[in-house]
Amino acid sequence: MADLSKCYLQNLGDSERGKLSELRGQLPQLIQRAKEQSEEAKAMKTLSIWGVELEKETEASDIVLLKYIRAEELDVAKAAERIVETLVFRADCQIDALKDAELPKCYQGHDVISGYDVEGRPVMISRFGKMNLEEVFGDVEAFVRYRAKLMEMAISKLSFKKGEPEDLTQVHDYSGVPLLFQTSQVKGAVSAVTKVFAEHYPETKGVTIFVNFPNAFASMWKAFSVFIPERTLKKFQILGERDQEQLFKFIAPEVVPEAIGGMLGTNGLSGPCKSLTVRARCTEEVPLMKVSKPCSIEWELRVCYWDISYELHFIAEGSNAGYAGSGSEPELVAKSEGMLEATAGVVSGVYEAKVPGELKCKFINNGAWFKSRLCLARAEEKKMKKLFD
Image 1 (cartoon, rainbow, N blue to C red):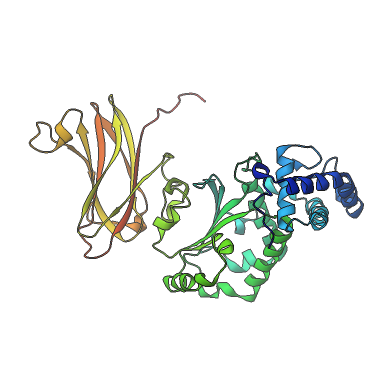
Image 2: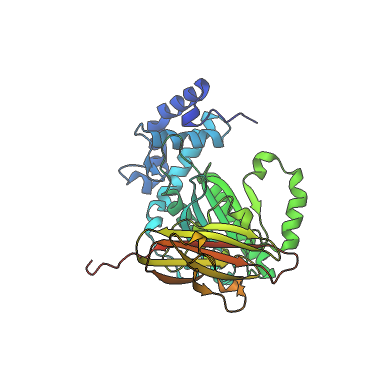
């Protein structure tokens, strides 16, 4: 297996620089070949891949060319052939127009492109549980275009600048997926997508995370993962129904949709979340926000799995942490009525702070004898709505 570590623009070796120069020198002929093979390509003024014009000598075009060289294990001749095939594919299938195309109804509402992971890679999240499998997978060509559209949208978030992330993080949520998911129809559509991506989207797979896998399957994956090569293993993560803590190592909670344990898509807050693990029979407190003047504070919190109870308190400045007997007791802002279930998702509210102080949240795990709970919380000063646009 070729050493590809020096085939990145920020770490380019002398040999790899030579291969890049060799491939760039062939571009006029490669583009001409693509136009000869495709009437659609011939009619286009310029040919590009992911919005990057290859003949312009830029960091972006260097990065794209190096992707093809890496994908073909440093074989320039094979990389050149693959570029021609991709240019023809993109022209004939009108891939550049996909990003703005409207999806058929059966493909809508299942996917989120929600920001960036902890390493700066764009995140694409797909939830399969509520799909109509016959409609979604019944038309293979439509399914391929649907997945290609998502890829184009996610790739458009890459900067194509030297030293910055060049690939994607994908999350596939399997909660609610029926056992019949592995039908021949589904396998055919998935195989077609895999082939298209393998041929025309080289070096775009960063990490693929499968979440809400049944625990039995997740455990089986972990057992067999010792036999998988490390380079391949790093690109896949199989997580069970209560593995949000592991998921948050790759993607911050504020980027993860509420439906799979995060805080994205709630009542408008977008700032970072604080997470903490609360052991059984324990109470943990997390400070949410300090304010130096009267203001409105919006808050959100949740438990990621099972249940927990909570209390929010506001502690006035100078009150010796605000506990009883200090001269200024903490003000109870909100508390759970019984247990807050993970299925309830995010709970939220607004507190009107009349004096400087700090908002804190207590998570109380007294209902558990053995199991910990993973909790999230955040708060922000409420922004005034504009009277006029």
